[in-house]
Picture (cartoon, rainbow, N blue to C red):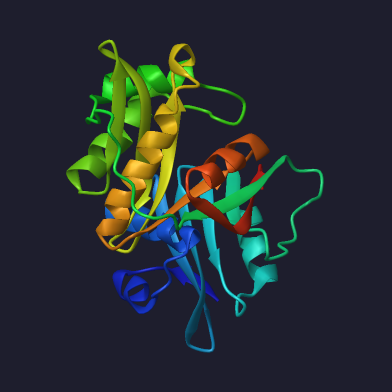
Length: 250
């Protein structure tokens, strides 16, 4: 049975994997009762078997070996999901012709790292300008007002870490947490302006913020949708732990 989730449901789950981290971070950031977010649990024989979140039309799934995958796939299709992100180890039954992105999930396991470059927290407008300069088919930046609303809200809720570095006074590279709980984070918005690439700036930032967050007792994850990015993360101290799928127009 899939039903609306509540705070007591989340308190029963101890998972720290990136899929549950994504859902829990969204719940802790926005809670219940808003039109653009929603949360559900799948309950089987009185036990929670899966968790589902929606942000606008983007769905995330936390699946377990106890999940009823047929029920979940039918639920996602019924909801008219624009996209659905989940662990690729679980074979959900979606039409084979739907657009799909696959990739790797990696966890930071390297030794602590202290950078000698100057790191600071930029303003959101400058960050957005940098991200737009780095946009690509696999690095899509949302509209500015949606971006600003989300990062401002998460910052006010203590759900955002943001680091950047500049070259000659210009914002050159950035990284931030896109999902964050007390026990785990997912890094994203990892970008270096085209004019300042091949200087190791992104690697310095990623290793520094990962060390900082792990020092706070959090596991640190990233999602990579390309072999080039996966190789970059591996050189930066991350190890592949799982595969993900994101189905569009699910």
